[in-house]
Amino acid sequence: MAASILGIAMAAVLFLHPNLLPSGVAVTEAQRVPFHASAIDFVSPYTGWVVVDFATGDYALLRTTDGGLSWSRQLSGPAQGSPHYLKFFDVAGGVTALVGARPVLYRTDDGGRTWTSIPALGNHSTALSWSFVDSDHGWLLADPQTGSPPRLYRTEDRGWTWRDLGPPAGAADEAFGARFSFLTTGWLATAGSGAYAYKTDDFGDTWQRVSLPAPHGAEGGGRYFVDVQQTSGRGAIASVVYFPPYLGRTGSGGRIRQFPPLDVPFYDGSRPNNYIFPTLIDQVVGAPFSAVQRPFAELLSSVDDGATWVPIDAPALTGTLGYADASRWWWIDAGAWAGSADGGVTWSRRTGTGGIEPLPGSLDVLDRYHAWFAGMSTAALETTSDGGKHWRLVSLAMP
Image (cartoon, rainbow, N blue to C red; front, side):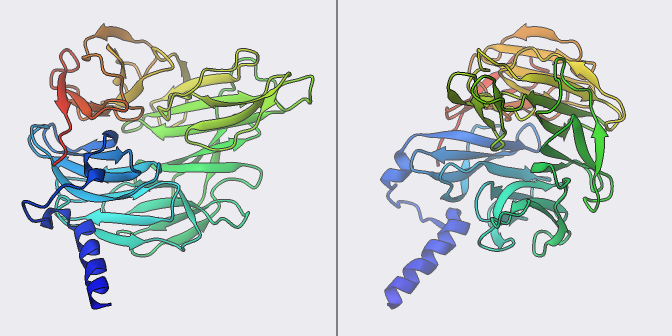
């Protein structure tokens, strides 16, 4: 029994302090299996963190301080396919957590050398989204798994305690995620009966509807999916997708089941289908639109905190977006780069990314010259230091 307790204690220590592994320890077979990047966050052109997922279902957090020339392994554990939330505020402080699992927050104050595990809420809740704006203030949207609507929680003490703010969306709407860009300002991803978004200006205590232009051709009576996120400063991008109502065996329609990605069981008039729709704002691209009944979609941009919106056309429905500021946007796809200087209204196309397919949501634009993105299902990144004119391929070497 003493040996078992000692083994459990050592396993817990090595999970939170993986750098304590002595040299010469044999690498297990699980550590040799293929892995790929699933989330990245850089605080400078040289210092950043990358979450990698293994085929075994485990994950590891890697850190570089020399622009990807070398990597150190800092945190590991089971993920089993859950998405990762990763946010660093500077070279020392950061947080990470799993989405879609029992809410547990991991935080570091020494650049990732040591981590503290902080359970949030109860064991029966499911995390739908995490959002931190600094080391102290964060929000958690959680599903209580009781049949009641998701509830929003706020922490002001680094995740040790959480205040219940209640359901953020209206009774007839569904909330799928909450994103905050400042202490006061946040937006929701929701499904509802109209083309409107939810915004807060008081730390998430209250939420107001913000009217948006409806997609062309939307006739009403169906279901709208609306997601808004801050680009930079006073900028925001919104995706509005309309699904007609079910009309029985002679019609077509769909109902949103989950997000992300936007998963919609769809009836095309002849047989039921299930489609994963690209919304671009969440940078998750799956199966193409239904060839029989395509939903109506609109991509909108704002540079004044959502007071006014203009329709935009992205270079493609594939790839991933990043933002140097509210006006300057970047778009990356396999072998292609495009930039916008007017908030996504017009684009100039340029090639030369090196050709790897980007991981959706991984484009991290640090400033007008420096950016990083991860490859899709590969152990590689690409980085630029001249505004996208040239890109350097960086391999993820597992320590």
